[in-house]
Image (cartoon, rainbow, N blue to C red; front, side, top):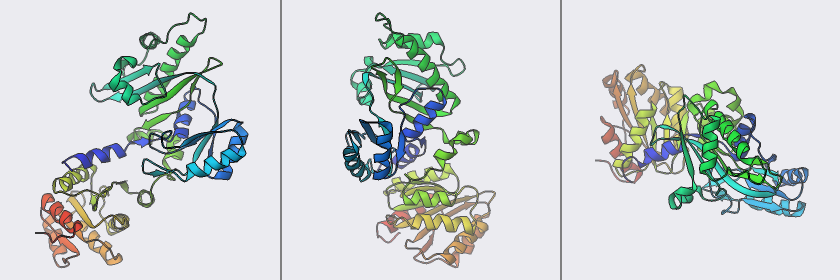
Length: 405
């Protein structure tokens, strides 16, 4: 794996992606029409929910992954028998590596047209971008690549926002402004674009995507699906996010355990467990592990504290991952002094029996004193290395079952 790919995988994992039903709650709070429905966590709940919304009903797997339809995660059912059979099947699926633990059950919709609408942050231009297409309900990435002209785009000045004229122009560019049939859809769509952008901006979102945005046979616009990514750095401004952030049902056991201890953890798929203090340092550690020929099993930032309590929790979480073969603890002492860090590590080791050997790199304030404290306890299970590169190379070797140099 080339240098930096572990960092990219971490950065892809960190945004706060909402499930479809949570995304619809986000949109509904902004006055945007969404398809009504109910969450079901069992076959029995799904049957009751389907009967309550009316037949035919649609069962939709709730996972933070794309391709649900192709994976069999969406089914239209006409009665209780079909609902039970498909609910049981979908709840047994794994989509994009994620188990399906809940369903969104909604009434089937009479659709006249399917469109696409999104607002996101365009890193290339460092600005907001609104996209609209008459070709919704399909792989939008393929559409953007193969037929870019089918996707109308509009850059937005965040200080100015989306004006009514801006929205009307985008509707016209997408070929959706024709009102010759007497409908008011063009104007309705322009108003909706303004609402979606406001929800995106005021809601501190990184992405709001409605695909498909449907026109019903009754001539109404309806968000039939919703993909919303929030900027978790803004969570302190949004107490209304609490039900979503506390809802950890879709997390794997590693993430759930880490969250219970207040640790900043992201699971990856390598064999070197990584613990550090500071997000930048931990991301750099992922890069160095990759450069040494290894793959990180996780990102774990313990923040400014490296006490025995914090270190015990961190080591327990990382060592509890069956894929971990070695643990790299990379600490730069700042406010927390080196001897305190070393004491925290030794205190944690006195409480835990770890499966994996530990490699420690300690630098910064009072690092010499910290390394001296560790020196009396070094063994083949606790190794100290002076630099991040040497520590990473040692951890990668141990994870591969080789003797480090």
